[in-house]
Image 1 (cartoon, rainbow, N blue to C red):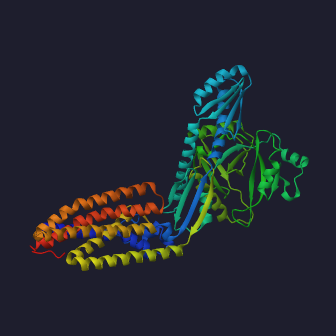
Image 2: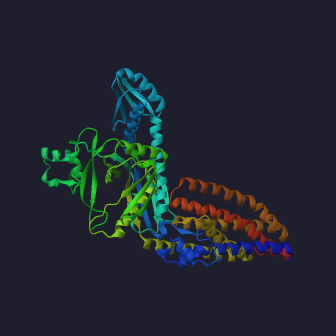
Image 3: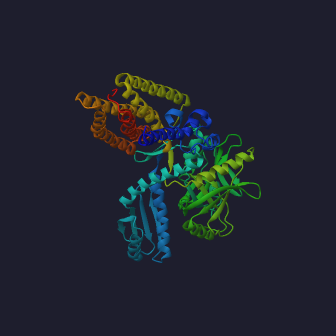
Length: 590
């Protein structure tokens, strides 16, 4: 064997050994580690030998193979638009008053998304209209009647906001899951207002719902302390029905309504609150059952929302000097200015921190807070351990740190895929692949003799290359992916069949062994190449347009086709031409 053949065979051996070496993390992840450790990168890194590739280069099992959680979240863009219009109204009124263009009040019709500006002096409305429409370009003029101006969000802006709300929600949800430590998560847009989430290897739907389903609609709203007896008067003038179980309690000298039924409390107070005010409830946590409320208490808040979680830059849980868990929050530059301005104008009043329409705490503002930093102290229920208390602070910080969603998100569907079903699918899928591979290997060896054995060697290398390629891209193997694996093995065999038939055809025309092999490969090349390229195009289309299992199938198909091109055109040709050219063979076993 001359140096040229040593180089060619050395390349094939190096590719084979490199492929096997690259599959070590996959082997340890799927075979050596048990199910509980399979998705833990830290454990895998500890168990891998020093000479192995990094743990991140491994093949992962999808939701249908190892079990996990499937969720569908629905984004409430309508509510987000309503709240955005209300906040815009407050901003416009403040802007007009600060510019000294006149004095206006802003009222919002949430259902029609209309914003009505009413000027105290109708003569100032011309200047106000010109300035507002030039500055707030996301609103357009709906109608004008004397000193009243009706604005409506621009239709194009509304559509863009809806799309951006869903896209931003997807990013926020993915960040939350990444901080939770879930590997190989699949977050995809479903329809126009839904998000599909797959969490492989997770077995606690309630924990997933608590983290992902918490929308973190954070608002900073002022408590109306001008009439501290409003709930007491409401209770006396309109006694609640006995079945609502609404009672009157006091908290720091302020009368509050309390009931174990939140909906009943809100329904009772709905039409009895002063204009421009909202009733929002606070959960009284159960001392026994986690995440449960034994009662709800009422707060009277200003309807305007001067600051939201969109301005939040960070949140961290810590333990105070009083040995109490707390959450420290920080605002971005714009939010810092707004927060400082808000606290300066409200010294002595209480500011409610509202998370998902529930008052978390309502501390009193003793002085102006500069620097854009604040602290949320965690309320402790009787009978709750310090670890549980600290855990609540860490969970709240995790949700806030991941970012506030632009629109409320609800859990439309959540289900757990059983792990036992995954094991059964793996066994059946692997058995099908092995049986199919064995039948093909035997057929090729019998029908094409020595050339068939060469094709079998290339076929085995092709399978290893597919697995290594998937591991390199850190892909997730699904049940359709196994089907794609078997399909690409069939395509690889088909390429070798085409080459062998071409060689047979050349031999039947009286060509020599060397000429038959060379012309057989040359003439089959473009047919094989064209077939692979057209299938690759279909694979890429499936990859970029498909979801979940379809994308897994496309990934395996693409990697398999590239591996098939290499093994059928390069590997088999090197081996075959060596036996014919290198040994000066006068015949070809085909």
